[in-house]
Image (cartoon, rainbow over all chains, first blue to last red; front, side, top):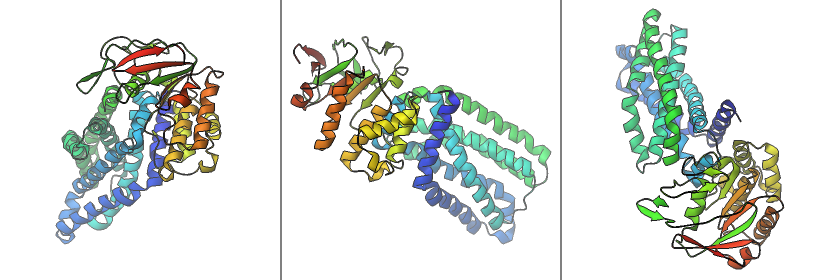
Length: 224
Length: 205
């Protein structure tokens, strides 16, 4: 089986588990929606603050929800020794890394669509710069998923993994938060030319962590 | 030798097994039987000494031979939210086999009636059968079994015994760690006693 087939196998397995358990739909999505709603309560929409800071609030909500999705991706491997089963399967660790990251990407993109609609409705944001918004979302999500998968397996072997994962991951994701927020701000202000360098930063970050993840996941996966 | 935390395990073990047939690993609790099976599966690192399994030197590479073996341990290694059929097919495809191999293993273990039941809803005995089917669906050359009879009903035990009997004709090597000595001795070609991390072959199994 080639790398692509192995990636598809792992991603399909993770997505099937999520579709059947409905954790994304019943827990992660409502959590993200509540965060968006709480920001709306905290920063009164009538003062016009919300529309200005909407990009940052959106990505904070996505990031917090992503932590749940990443933690979940490795929690399913803990029960009944499934992790040992996956290790014994003989798959290339790079395939496992890419498959898990791909499944997280699919879930996060779905989450971003719903949270994006909530932001538009609740924060009074006028959507502009569709191509930049789309490119930013895809690049930032790839970065979130690849970094999350790498740090997810690092935390998987630790006893306090639920609390350590955010502690390890959030500082590393600062460039994603900065780049995605600034690109969204520029796109919504109509300054799309200013946004593309931020998109480029996100692409570089995603490629870097995907490459590092493919190399480093194996040893971390074996020792988790 | 391998280390479990800071503690050495299997220090001084010397064991040479030919391919094909059934080998019983006996010995008291804590002797190192499970550790030995995990070491042979490549789940535990070798800290000193040499170990070659299916032509792979585990001191150098403990991954590449995994597709050719299966370990049935204490855990089912299955996903709660996948059905029996989905768990079997995932494991078989990961090992480079097709869905037919998984379906054949399911039939052989008598799991057709619960094929579409998710793992979380299975009884303990059904899970143990499913665990065996997952291993068999991978069509392994080397099958490592850790207390395979535990938790099985009479019918399940008969099915397992038949699998062990068929191992020789199927050209498979089976290593069974068990405390069900009379039952497993009747099926084994050889017996090796593991005690204090060392192996003592028993000549007449």
